[in-house]
Each structure stands twice: as C-alpha cells, then as structure tokens.
Length: 197
Image (cartoon, rainbow, N blue to C red):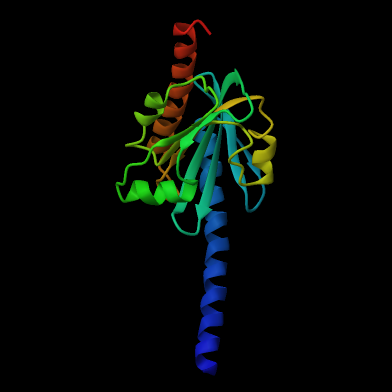
C-alpha cells in the first residue's frame, strides 16, 4: 500500500513538472511565431498571447491546454462591428465538448441568440476545418487575465476560431487559420453591405 501511494505521488509530481516544462517550451515556440508573423508577444511565464494585425484585421492568438481535448490555439478577430448584448452565433456545445465531437466526426449545430450580423451558413462552411467557430461577444471566451484586457475590452463582435493542431502548430497552419478568421470578418462586412447595414 505504501509503495502504491509513493508511486502515485511520484507520478503526479512528474506530470505537473512536465506540464510546466512543456508550457515554457510552448511559450518559447509562440514567441518565435510572433516574430515570424510580425506580432507582439504578451503575457508571462504561464500565459502567452500574440497580438497583431493580419490583412488589416486586429487579431489575438492564444494557445490553451484543455485537460480533455488537449492543446488548442484560439484566434480572436475584431470585426469592427459594435456588439449587442446577448447576441451571438456559437456552436451549441461547450468549447471542450465541441472539440471532442469534432474529432469524432460528429456533426453539431449552432446556438443563435439575438440578431447577429452574419448568417449561420457562413460559419458552417468552416466547420470541416475547425472544431469551434463563432461570432460572439468579446467577453464570452476568456481564459486568462490578459485576454480580459485584449480582446475582452474590445467594443466589437469577435470572430473566434479554434485550431486543433497540438501544442506547437506549424507556421503554415497558423497562417491558414489567420486567413480564415480574417475571411470571416470580411464576410461580415460583405453581408452588411448587401443588407444595406
């Protein structure tokens, strides 16, 4: 019994130590990505986010680790359209559940609240490539105190896109996700012009 307790304690200590070491390595990797993308790196030894502009759109990139789904990268893009309270289009599953269902190839729909300035079909077109994509309020998906400052302080709707490419996604994958999130912002602008809004 004593051997089992000692083994468990060593295993817990080792996994926590590996997690911290992995976080430092991940952060160094994202700092390198920031330089390659001409973004600024912000945060501390645990939380890091990249802030910059891609194709004229303000974007924040945030690596996050879920204990279930694993490491993901979140992209927040400022739409430039002032948000309205209780108005969004989001997957009808929680972020973690949506990632797990997407990995299993299980389809899921969207929850629409209020009258968002984008149609559900535009977001649905990206579901095959990304496990979670939403047009939402800047304060709804905040995982660090740095995110509560940027993009949490933005006054506009946010396009949130999640890339499921592990702890260190490649530069090509990051650029592709940046292209997709900015395409979505441009889609919103196009829909507003067509609707006369």
